[in-house]
Length: 201
Image (cartoon, rainbow, N blue to C red; front, side, top):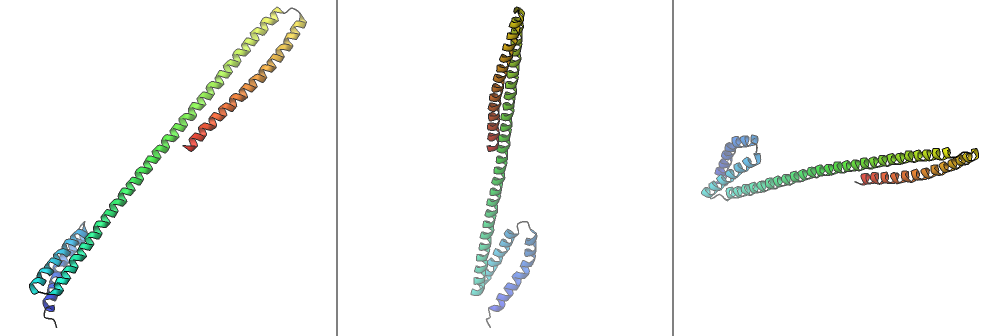
């Protein structure tokens, strides 16, 4: 039996007894990993010191392994913390990107709505302009007809004038219909362009 095994076992048992309350306290601390690393390093230091005093290579090897394990756990904890930080930053950037995209979408929708409202107002203004022009034309035709009728004495001339007026009105109505159709086509094309811009935005 190795004579050094007895003090080695005593050291191990003593350190376990001493560590028990420290491990218990470390388990409830906010930063458990850091507290545990401090305890492990202290354990390794004590084993190294006792190993040097007793010239016990097994204790020295155990101390070295415990120190290396603590270093590895610290490195792993650091890498985990860095990964969590990167993940949090990526999540923050993703949310910021979503907010920017939603803001751009709302702004584009608002601009499209404003364009559509302007197009509707332009269309209404054109319709009013056409209606005003039509009323003015009819008024002028009526006044002209009344003036001509008052100056015509013979019935035959009146009949001829009425016939000519009917033809003129028919031609005017045809002209109006063509103008109205042309304006309706233009307004429909403008509305289609606005809607297409709104959808593509």
